[in-house]
Image 1: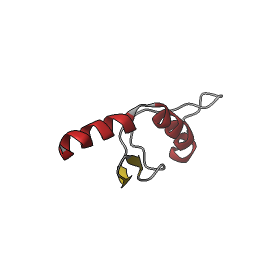
Image 2: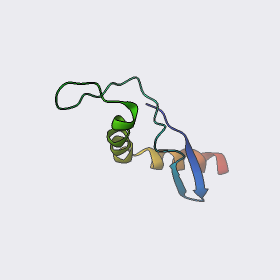
Image 3: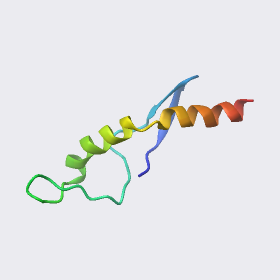
Image 4: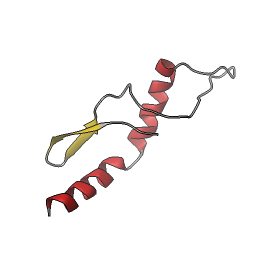
Length: 66
């Protein structure tokens, strides 16, 4: 999975476009059908929100600033 992020202010990073998560994962619906990109976006965004990526970006940015 990959997504673009932006630095909004010092200490604040966010997804640049929540509809543009790139992945090779195919999500299936309740009937086993492959979900479209738009249908999958909700689930992918929930997954990204659950990851500690913002803390990792902040840690990496902190190293660059020092």
